[in-house]
Length: 155
Image 1: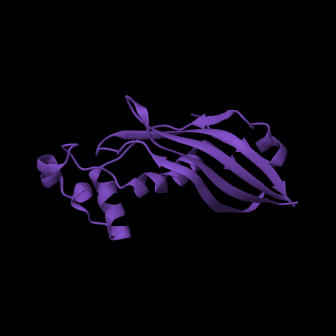
Image 2: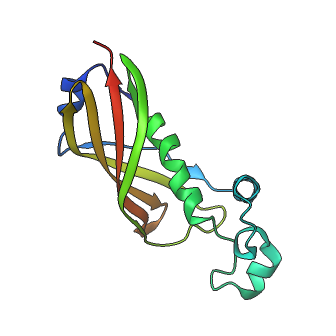
């Protein structure tokens, strides 16, 4: 998908209530899962021990950490959109985050994003995105939530 370019608040607001985009798929490998475990010190076997997971997990495989999926939201969003004329962007929060299903190793995930709300806070655009992470060939979402960013546009 081609990246959308936003130059100002009004261009952002033109997407209100509309789908902003759908990202390309990304394959979640064991290497990515292990690197996330290393960074977060979360070595639970269901994520990092393929042999044990094959024997004991109901998924018969390792699964990505739920927070790995959350951490990928920024990556996917930055691949969908380029916001210009911004001094800085701040991650403001995630509301109504729900995990729908685990991501089994070697699955492919992507996000579908809709602009849920936008408001002008004295020159700062508060942007709330309806996020749905999907796994290829599976109708149930990996996660859903409302992701909020603050964009400080240049004057």
